[in-house]
Length: 368
Image 1: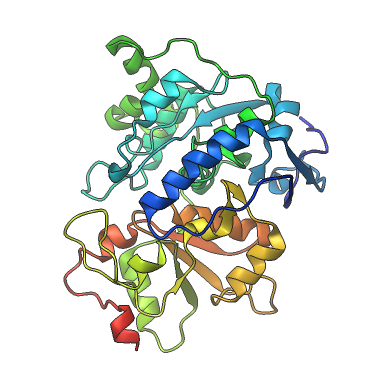
Image 2: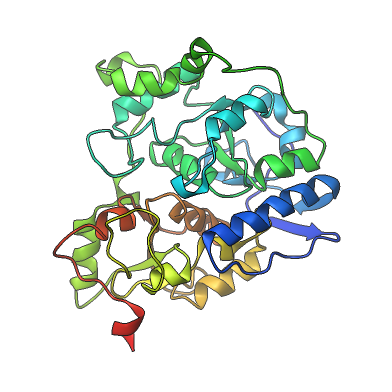
């Protein structure tokens, strides 16, 4: 199925009368700023242009699309809302989805469609669990998936990466998320949904399917195959940083004060600091108002932090964060710089590394 020429690899943004966010000093500051930006973006038009790309070939399907593109190709897509928040944000993603959503969007539960045999949050599920969830969502391997969240560009990239790493070929993040959709005049479904227990059970049926499925993979319609080369364990990260010839560059997406060990972690009991030798590109630094920054700016930002994705010898990038969520924002950004960039996610991220007793940790003090 061919899509319009609005489908693209690299996104170029033109903004009118939208001043950039000032750099927040904390996660709480960012969300207070973003709340105000969400109100403003609704009242302002966003003009976005894009280079065309042949979307009839799976390998050329973009990982990022604009709200205007989604409006033009709406009938060809299946849409997932992957809204999710940190516990300290005190927000209910499911409640927000039930109150308003893009028409036809289904809820993708990042915490629920996950490995529940570990105490680590929202780790990747098994292939069988993922296929069971996909079947319950009514999604096939050939479907075009567009994923959004309610902040703009926060949790949707994690869902995008999850589908990608299980082998889905045509999956993209909606740049700017729900606020951008509203800003271009996209329809909004405000009909009652999930207002009682039966309604919530229906919405969370994919989560239940993932957690209860004991079916053999061959009996499931959706065929998933984990791309193990794009996932890292703590042992793999430890082996890399311990090697004399390091083949991978570790980049941490947490806010700089947490990376330096100067601010507390939102999850209790974790050590402060970062993986030795890692670089720091805070997740909010690659976007402005929930919209990913232009590719030229992303390239310079990554290059200044050890990742020249347009250089002669392109490094293998391993992205980490607090729990494997915002690391996926950096992976998405890297794919805009070079769609063939070799990237992986350290799934356990600091939730795992910061709790291990015998791994090396650096802080701002130890680096002086």
